[in-house]
Each structure stands twice: as C-alpha cells, then as structure tokens.
Length: 561
Image (cartoon, rainbow, N blue to C red; front, side):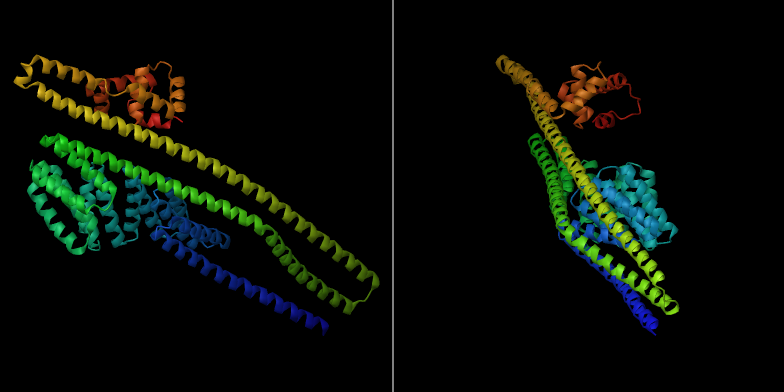
C-alpha cells in the first residue's frame, strides 16, 4: 500500500516535469518569433543596433532549441540588417550561413530567396560576375520548382546584370524569358522591357527605342514605379546624346536628376552631364558638374564609413555590456543550476526510497539496509563530483569567451584601421583627379587661346602663355602627394620593394596611381605622357613583377598586405 502511494506521487512529478518541458518549448518558439518581429521592425525603422540585438538573441535561442526555421529567419534578417548599414562583407557571410540552413531544411523558396539576396549584395559591390552566378542559381531553382512569379523576377534581374556586364546576348535572352513568362509581375516586366530598349539604343535603332521608352515611362508614372521612371528618363537622355541632340539630352538628364532616389544614381547623372558639357565645349559647366561628382563621391564614402563605424562601435559596446551582464548573472545561474541539481537528486532519492520500501516489504535485514545506505552515500558523492565538474567546465567556458572577445576586439580595430587607410587613399585619389582635371581643362583653354592670330603676333602675351603652360605642368606637387601616399601605405610599399627590388621610383609612383584606381588615361594625363606610353609602361612593370599577361595588376597590388 505504501509502495503504491509512493509510485503514484512519483508518476505525478514526472508528468508535471514532462508537461513543463512541452510548455517551455512552445513558449520558446513564441519568444523567438517575437524577437524576430521586433528585430525586423527596428531594421526598417533604421535602428540597426536594436535590430542586431533582437535578431542575434533570437538566433541563439533558436540554436539552443534546435529550431532551424527560426535560425534561418534570424540569420537572413541579420544579413539584411548588415546590408542596410552598408556592411557588405558581414552581409555576404551571414547570407551564406542562412543559405546553409536553407539547404539543411531543404526549402527551395528559402534557398532561392537567400541566393537572390547574395546577388544583390554583389551588385552593390560591383562584382557582376558573382552576382550573375547567384542569380542564375536562383533562376534555375525557380524553374525547377515551376515558380513562375520568381522565375520572371530572376530572369529580369539577370537581364539587367548581363546588360551592365556588356553581355548583350545573354541580356537579350533573359529579358525575353521574363517577357514570355505569363506570371511575371508588371514591375519585373517593365524592367525587362527597359533592358530591351537599352539594347536597341546600343544597336543604334534609336527610333524604335524612343517609342518603347516613352511607352514604358507612361506605365511607370501611372503605376508609381519611381526607380524605373528615373532610369527610363536617364536612358532617354543617353538616346538623345547618341543622336547628338545635346539640348534635349540635358533636359532629360536634369529631369532624371530631380527624380533621383539616392546618391549613387545622382553620381551617374552628374558624370553623364559632365561628359555632355565637354562634348558641347561648355568647360566651365563641365568643371562645376565634375565638382558635383567629387562631392557626391565623398558624401557616399563618408556616409558609408560613418554608418559602418557607428554600427561597429555600438555592436562592440553592446557585446561588452552583454558580457558584463553575463558576469553579473553567473552567481544566480550557479544557484539555479544547484536548484535543478537538487530537484534531480530529490527525484532520484524518491526512486531509491521506493526500491528500499519494496525490498523492505520482502526482506527486512539490518545488514542489507546498511549496505543500501552505503550505496546511497556513494551515489550522492558521485553527484557532488558531477556538480564540481560542471562548475569547472563553466569556468573554462567563461575564460574561452573572454579570450574570444579580446580577439574580436583586435579584429575590429584592424578593420577600422583598414577603413581609415582606404578613406585616406580615396581622398588622395580624388585630390589628384580634381587637380588633374582642372589643369587639363585650363591647359586646353590656354592651347585654344594660343592659336588665335592676335595672340601669336603679340610676343609678350605669347611668352606669358608659354610660362603658364610650364607652370601647369609643375603644379601637381608630386613630392607632397607621394609623401602623403607613402605615409598612409608605408607597410604596403615596403613589402612591394622587398619582393621586387628591381622596381625604380618611377615604377613605384606608377603602381601607386594604379592602386588608387586611376585609369590609363588619367595616369597618362598626370605623368604628361600618351595613353600608349602608359600602356607600355604598365606591360614592362608586369614583366618586372613576373606576372602573367592575364593577371590583374590591380588585384595583385590589393593582395599585398
């Protein structure tokens, strides 16, 4: 009778614990979903730190609970949060983790969605080859799953990427695929037709292209497709420029400028307007528009660097505060662990007592009872040793976490240093290009003036013009520029000269301009040599460095630490 009562009590306790575990699992899923919703809302409210905090917490809870769906959602939105703060490196690595989870879950919709997201990041990074690879994989999955809506979207995206890559055959093919697909959404269809119009412009069929662009502009304006409307207006400006109707081209370009939704699009428009002014001989206006290009480029870089720095700083502060909070919770965590251990011990003890009562009902023996008591003491000692072992493992884990935090701090400092070096190099390149462009324009104007008959006949003015030309050639302040570049990139130049001792100072200067992303034409203008001489010098340097003809000199310079 006593045995039955004890067994009934034990069954009630076990049933209560089982139900608690089930409730905990459901509550955990709800909590994770709630954290993801809060994180996504914060992300679209441009509160990147709150989004990062909630999504990271959701991911960690999902990993602990073994919920792969919630892990994917948290990782995918974490990557989008990185993308929105222009941290493209972390965005790609986090998207790849989300892609691995999509493969584990064998969910084709998640898989093609995250592949498309990765492609968008590569488009922003101007790596069109990588972008097309990931978009093609998304398109193939959509085709395999017979998902017409996604298939049309990815075909339209592929057409645009191949157009920017100058692969007109593939661009035309995928544009037609999007247009032939009955399930393609209207916005994707407009983008595909815009690609077709751009291809017509490139082929010189301007009349047909203009008709298509005007029709698409009416649709975009009616449906409120702002980005497409501005792109179509820009395309029309290019068409008028190809037709040598420069005034109409300028009107359309200025109209597109009013519609511009971001600085990157404004940058493209000012570069176009600057080239248009040069073709028209409006040199003063060309300088003004070139200044706008430089200002917008600086604004984009400053905005990107500021956002990255602020987000990194806030992430570091958040990680530090979380670490301090974890340290403060260690004691209470240990107490909870002890409490859970005691509950387990009580359950184990009750089981042991039930066995003791059962044996006592059969055979009451002092010696047997004493042996069972000895056994129980040993079991409790083993449990105590397990507790001590658990505490020791927790201490080791804490030390490892501290070490990882230090390593993360060092990596962050190194990354910030690299960002600062890149920013200084960009400022130096902008300064060189600005001064070079200004001198080229002034020299061209001076050259034109010098051909006037009244100037040639006036000896004094002719000598002044020659002196002005000489002054322009010496106006670049090479020593100051090279000193600044060497101060910023001292380590890189040291490694380069050690690996290739045959390089001359002129070779080093030429390589410095290449590292600053200057084109052959720009370098030729800076060194006062012809573009052909510039190309030959580049080939000689490639031979000195022992590189293959197919290898990119710019990539080699960037690979040097």
